[in-house]
Length: 326
Image (tube, rainbow, N blue to C red; front, side, top):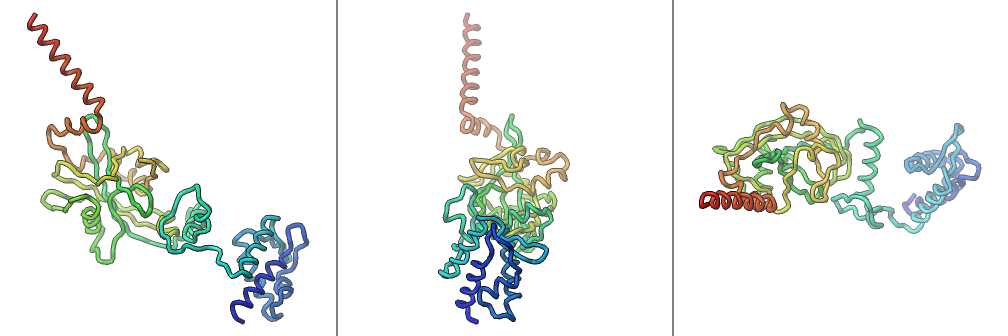
C-alpha cells in the first residue's frame, strides 16, 4: 500500500474516533470502519490509538474501547486528519539549533527543535531519572578575581547558541587528549589574546560532576560529565571580551539567576560547590592586579565612590594646610 492511500485511511480512522460525548468504540472497529483490510485493521488501530495516547487525546476503557478524551481533543484529532488529507507537515524548521525562552511566537511553537525541547523538558520534569538521549564530556574553567574591598567575582562568557552565560570552556572534541587540554584550548579560543603559558599559568582540577538536563542546542535530555578547573596565573589581568560579565558566587549558585538579562548555565557549579573546601568563595584569585591598578579600575567601574574619595582626600589636605598656615 502506498503512502498516499494509507494517509487517507489513517485520516478516515481519525475521523471515525467517537467524540467525547459519544460511546466508545472497540479499537479494532475504528480501522475496519475506515476501510483498512480486515487482516490489518486491528493492528493498525492499536498502533494508531497508542500513538494518540502520547498526545493525551484518547481515553481507553477496560474493554479496549476508545473515544476522544475531551471536546478539544476531538477537534485536535480531526485537525490531524485534515493535515493528512492536505499532505501538510505539522512541524517544520528542523534546521534551527538554538532554543528560545517563553513567551513564544506562533512560528516558534511549531518549530520542530523547540517542540522537541519542550517535550524533553516535560519528560525530565516528570522523572528525575529520565533516560538521557545524549551524552557529552565538558571542561569548564573557573576564573576568579578579588578587587580591594569587593567579594570574589567569577568570569562568565555568553554562549550565543545556548543563549546563556556560563564559565569559559566547552565540549571535549575527538582530538582532545584530555579534559585539561580541552580546557586550555577553550581558554585560548574564548579569551582575547590569551595563550596558555605553563611558566605563569596553571590549571588546578577542582572535580567532576554529572549534570542531567535538556540541551539548549540539540533539544534532548543529555548527561553532561563536567570537569572543572581553576586557573591560577602570574598575570595581572584577565579579560573575557565585550560580552563577558563578572558575577558574585551567590549568583552562580542561585537557580534561574540572571546577569545582564540572561540566565546562567551553572547547574554544574551548584553541584561542585559543596565538594570544595570553603566552596567557590574560598578559592584564591586567579590573578593579582598590579599595584596601583585598583585606582584606575575603581575610577572606571565605581566613579561615584572614586570621586567621593578624591573629594574627601582633597578636603582633608586643604583643612590640614589651612590649620598649619593659621
